[in-house]
Image 1: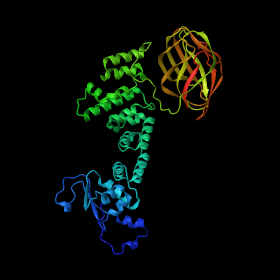
Image 2: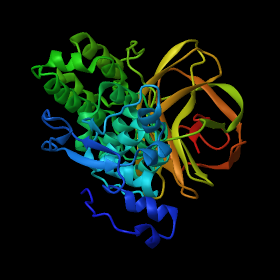
Image 3: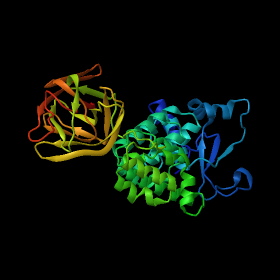
Image 4: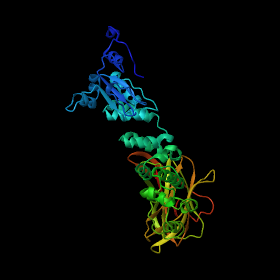
Length: 451
């Protein structure tokens, strides 16, 4: 509240510093030469003597102090278009935020809380007080959580705070499910939605992300006062729909969700079902690049020194065991293709925890090869975390003609990176029927990973 003080004789003698004297004048009628009527309210009549309306507050101030702390106030009072009015209305500023701004200008004291930080940030920007802006951003950063990340991201974009926006996006990457489940997600604007959907680093199943996007579309229809129909949801999503990575879903996830949502056209549904079930796969207008909460450069190692011809397949899996000296995330394998020219293969790839006999990740997919002795990428739909010293089995079950295979295999392969420490793979033959793949010969020549 505004402090109404009677003038005190010789009050200056009780203040030991300039800061204390100016702090005493904060929100004080003493020596004030301007008043601000702050906040939204009904139109006031009767000139300066009229009392503030509901929701408004009349705050005394001192032109010199304000002009010394803000270029905007300096221009307001001393510039070529300076005002001579003793009372200035600020309907777009919240009283609590304006008081926080004045408190800072008079005393350097920062007084912000969860309820006032955004309005204070707006006011600090409006009156060009960057030091208070920085305090607001610091406060928001310290209180950033998954359940408020989207709300703060919207505000950071609105107020052009790239550092805060980047921190919000990092939080959304790490806790995507919690972030999209929060109320603030459905309140974001379409540009913010697209900025998030474009990211490769979200940690969430694509089917769940699609469900959240449908919730957003329903909320947007209501904001635009449109009936919540399939056509209107498709209309409000616009470009955002093309950023959903439908090829990353399993066929079961696609059938249970997007295929029945009514948002995709019949042709799009059919093309995506064909993409899941046939080889060669028809081209679809959706991104198939995996999302994974990984940073840095993709790495790969090849465990063979030479390539030979004719490796056959009869339904048995090629397997090789391995350990790694550090934590990594595997995103796929490089496999050999046909010796008979361009061919399509069906393949199931897996990574299994050897001791627990637990499948950590798998993908039923296919790949096309060109008949050369090169390797061909086959990717998991999500990255698979690999822990140091734990033994894992890499498994690939191919269906197709005879292929090339590797020989002169290495038991130990070291990957060196200029920006990271060495990654050392040690390979072991897998016991049992593994289609002949071993340390020395066979399939699964390459492992693709991030450190």
